[in-house]
Length: 378
Image (cartoon, rainbow, N blue to C red):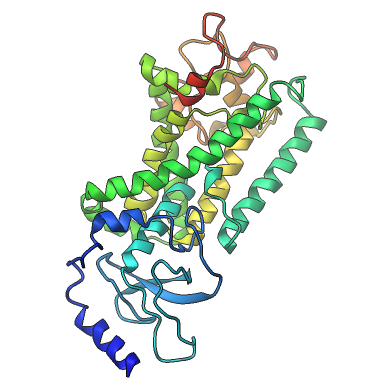
């Protein structure tokens, strides 16, 4: 009898998803971000470990759906969270787990996706409680092991391995915390601005094959971050957000993590827009994009020299990006992260082979020393 009442409630509520019950308006939905399980397992707090399957609607106004129901776009793995899951029935039963206000979890999914698909190194989203997050963590650890070994055996420059170790460790912690914080705050803000409606005309991009979506997301993110990065070298208030990243005189994969809090915010904005609003990436797509982004960010800051031959016309190498950290080259050159084409097209390219091997890195002598304000980026 209770199951019948639940089914009737599901049918009767199908046409009223635009109305909010008391205490369940948009503000409440945003307050729940991070509390329910999303398939990315990136920023959400998870209560319980039993998994159930529920489809995600093609439109966010669907409050309750059934597996295989017409209009379902894909299935996502959910876990029990006492904040929203009323009861669970056996998977073999015809009855379905009811997930009131499913769009709250959909919002959480997008928070994780937005940070994951294109982030150069948004490590704060890692959570080993699900398969995709485990793959991201393994990718990071494997890449670190490879580049650390590479730097030790074939370094481009002789560096002091203990140089500013504590400062670099603090910078790494800033990336962990702020990298998780900004996407989680940006998505509810953009939801209030109803940016989803602004991207309705580009809905065809969301139906692209996964490979095409990941490649397109990475290219668009690289183009967007090129301009954000370039603007950081312009006005004084933007340069303060980027100054900490240039403060190291010994560049390697670890010191490359020096990134201010405001810097991470400015980089997160285009990535949230591309991953969530433009492409609406899935869990696997986000994990693949994140993994590539991690490898790229570690790669360009690694203290090694590599000759890629003709590929260097397109792919950024550590030698290419090291020029960007040169102390005495102004205005700054080689601003891109993954592809050299933006620097070639917009006049910021400088051939790294045209420079001596020992040009100095870091901030000029008239720049202030590292401080808490510099780490904050204000």
